[in-house]
Each structure stands twice: as structure tokens, then as C-alpha cells.
Image (cartoon, rainbow, N blue to C red; front, side):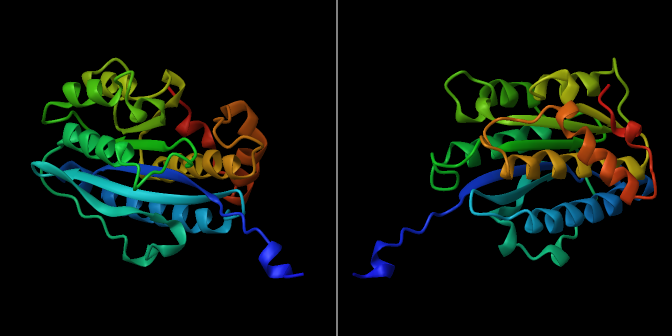
Length: 240
């Protein structure tokens, strides 16, 4: 008997996380861009620790500044990403619509995200109003026959107040309003990415990684993380 021949290797399914990151000039205020760099790096390191045989986390980063978006980090297994080279810079305007179109193209491409992949998470981070046609891009993203419409979406507004036009853009992007978060200072940017990390890694050990855990179901993990961070209050990252 050929024991090795009878052994079937089960390859982990990819769990894609796509980051849409505002790197416009205003992100330099208060060193928000520096905090964003550190928060993303910490998230990637935590994702590496969560690797298992059921789900492998893959990450892409799409930045938007000047007049268009660009794929800063192509979609790749987190273990293949050079974390220390994540060095986002802030300049230019806020072409969010182009970032949404770029993300949609990535999601619709079955060579990048195969049918066997788990439901992707798309995270939008911005500190201001889009400077391009974001509405038509979002309408296409949310079209009923689009794969992108099935993604789990969350957003953080840095210095964005509820009731403003900027907030309304984020609200239209997310899966539900409870997934719009507010950051009023640099520390809350890090706390938001802790939430992204915990909600994603929880899926890797779930009986069904396609199901998105509710915030209430993550409360014990969030409380543990809160204690590890010198009892910093996570209320600052609560949804509006």
C-alpha cells in the first residue's frame, strides 16, 4: 500500500481582505498616515498568527490619492507580504470612486479570487469627501449580479461626523450602518484595525467562515484585547 498516495492534502481556502486606504494629503494631518501604516502592519502580523488548515488570509491594499487609485499591494497570502515595506505616503486628492472600481475588478476576477474562496471582506478608510464620481462606481459595485455585492463591508471615517456628506458616502458603502466606525484621533485608527483583525480571525476558526460574526459575539475577545492594551477604552471605535 502506498500510504503517501492515499494521503489527501486539504488546501486551505483563501479568505480575502481588501483594504481601500485614503492616502490623500489631508491624511498627513496629525500623522494619521503614520498611524495607519503601523495599524496595517500590526494587523498583517496578527493575520499570520491566525493561519490554519481551513482558511488562509490573503490581503490586498488599494490606495487612493492624486487623481486615481492604485494597487499598492496585489492580493497575496499574508505570509508572502513584506510587512516591513508597508510605507504609505499622503499626498493629493481623494479619488475614492476609482478605488471602488479597482476593488470591484479584483473581486470579479476569478483568477485572483476563485469561486472556492470564502466571502471577501472589504475595508474602506477615509478622512474626507471623494473628489471623483464615487456614486456610479458604488452602484456598479452593488449591482445584484456582481460578486462584489456579496462582500462583507466595513468603513472608518477619520474625523467624519454623522450627518455630513462624508458620512453618507461611508454609510452607502457598508453592509449595515453598524459597520460605520468613527476615529477622532490617531489611537482610534489602531483600535479600528484591531476590530478588523478580530472579526476576520474569528472567521478562520468558525464552522462556517462565510458567516460574519456579530460585534456582540466578539465582545469577550475585544475585552481581552482591551486588557492587553493597558485597559484602553475601545468605546472610541464604536459604530455611530
